[in-house]
Length: 119
Image (cartoon, helix red, strand yellow):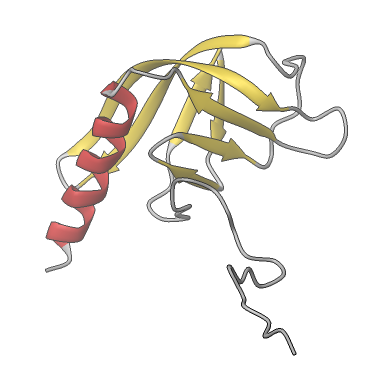
């Protein structure tokens, strides 16, 4: 009788994204004159749940990330690709340009400033 070997196990509903999603701190995102608030983010991109607008999947956007730390508001420009748009369900998912470590470094900087201010 052959024995069964489990090579991998993946529970239903498990998040398979490369980067861990975080809800806090929140960031504001300026896109073409309007400001949206992140509902979650990772080092690779972010999601704007309340976004309603003309941007569509595969569009390349330029905007500004706005983070708030104990030292006040800090800003960082970014470029990203729209990977999910509001045409099917509300929201806009953005993936930062591959190879550009600037947005991830800015998000990490803001996160660490918030953590340190609570310590």
